[in-house]
Length: 123
Image 1 (tube, rainbow, N blue to C red):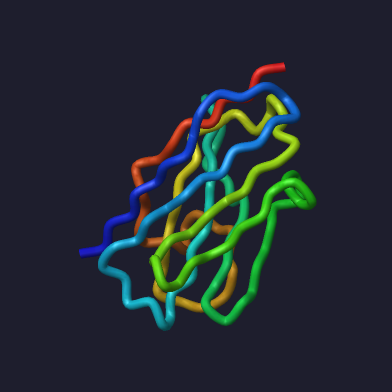
Image 2: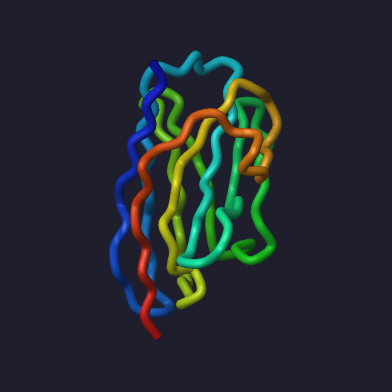
């Protein structure tokens, strides 16, 4: 059974940083890709960053140059380093995984989801 557990959310002021973690359990690692998504109140869930096991990485335009996705394959953990945070980054952040290669930012292409971790950025 696949389980994804996020941590690292919190409240910061604009310009600050946070690092999200996603521990993955039950995945067959050799052919998975994972991503970070977020959903603000009243808005649709959107892709933020994704990475696959072959090294392909993709970012949403809104976070390029500020967010960095990385993986620790030995620990089965996905990270999202978020720097220079803005109030518009405020959202619930979700980790997701799928059995496919390619760094997709499409919500519909992911089968497994974590429960989310809240990020709040104040101005």
